[in-house]
Length: 170
Image: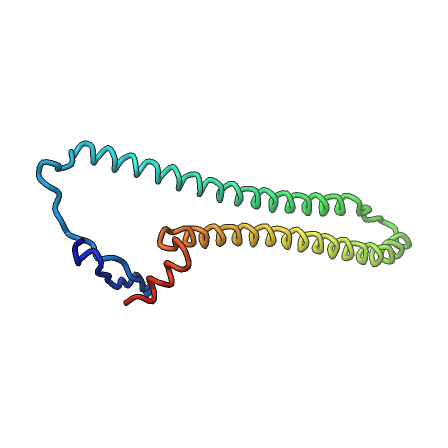
């Protein structure tokens, strides 16, 4: 056993400090020199797999955002339809003075009704947006958990005892 195999070095990776075994800087023998074409094929294959993985990950996120966007558009259309119905239900202006007085009295009532309908529509919109926020928060939480899990699954954390032993050794 070589004494360099037992030596450890401290590494600082953006403030994350950890110990690892020192790497030996040995050149491979000339007879075992890797084939440049084989290395290029392997590099391209790794790159292709990585890009496919990223595409899959981003496609899920794009699908989620498209769902949220379509829901928001549906809410906008629903609100616009309600406003159109309210506009169509208002009676036309009448010509005579007595009917004008009656209409102004009815106008107050219809104005109150219109304001109530607007308040109800706004309440529905706020409820829908709140639901969208809940969905977005759930997406964020799931993504955060996935990121945390990727760090937990690192091979450095093989077992808590080994981790503590490696952190305590100097």
